[in-house]
Image (cartoon, rainbow over the protein chains, first blue to last red):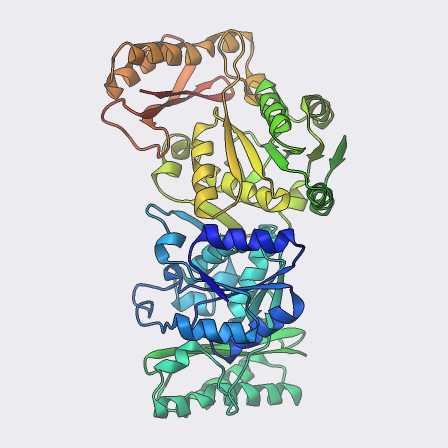
Length: 282
Length: 282
């Protein structure tokens, strides 16, 4: 399997695939692939003739005090994993290739959907995400692009961007992949030591319990939210960033748990800021 | 020739043209076509197999006190003119089709290139332009798109956007078309009464004289700029917005007239705010 580093090369390969009538599936990643990514690639492989995986740790979506420098990277390992999962080509551009000198064009989804949840503590994060995803969409021009539900807010924002900027691309949301113990797969889990990793289980446990509460008839979002907060606080290593129960499409607050709801949280444990969520139809 | 109003229809027509191997030329306009637009359509017709002309008075590029409501519109007249010039299809969407309820995604080119010249007095104008052009590019997916040099700043910003967001589209700049008396063609010329139209000739006259000055060896931008300002002021009906001499690609100020330079101006006459410019290689 080929690994290409320039926009020109990936364009040529995609043009070649398209000219022989192949459909293009695309999985954008920041690399250090885990089973979550692998599930996206496998699905893309199943539903398309030619699968492009990009690996690019995008600097514009990291804040100045965030983990851009320390974010884990291992291209060879990623390439092997991606190939086994069904990738046909890896696009791994340099920062200079994606952001040449003087770069100043940005795509931004304004409004509540970008401001709340992770938007509150990660100023500019989603502007970086939508900008790089626009660029990557223009480069790869896929028929379908695959995104994990774990980044639920990112997914909602990208769906809105695709609709409003009229990208002719189907966005395929894919379920969160968890370890057996419930921990949501994340490249940032590598930041956790043994003790922290154990503490991190409280995130999914709280979400599962909240889901049960709702299935048993609780429809007051404040009650469920407080339950989750109290639950997480029983783990001393946790520092809650947010716990929110919102409309799954718009991310607007809700008075009553009904319809498509998203229960999302972000919690700091040691060096890692972990996110997790559960989506349900009530 | 077909006039289509929905994104779905234009996409279908373009897919059909592409599937029979046709290249797509695209001329985005706000309608009320004049000979400037016609020259773009003719060129697109010469260089492509299938020519799309869009007619859309884009509300997001007008300021609250600008002429969005009064901007001249005549779709039937436009369709006839476009067809004669070689258009294969007209895309004339409604505002609702382009900006559905809750729309909040914008594309913006930051920096000097957007802030100066027209950016100074038309807050948000270019953000509206780059947003609608991104959308239209995603809908039409042309091989080549044609823009008039008259909107020199718009052209420079769109070139930067296309490069930085990696649109695989060739931007073709086309020369300003002038009336015999020198007045640059503009849909906004319809705002001028007879007296104002006469006064408006001072714009191109000043630019032509400035060009001569430079050809005769003057290389001090401040001297040429002052000459133009004094010249325009001799016409009592004029109110200068700006006169600037800048680098033609970056729109940065220059100390010396050398290389590719742009002499650009905006002047209010009656209800009309007119722009004109001259580009030269020194």
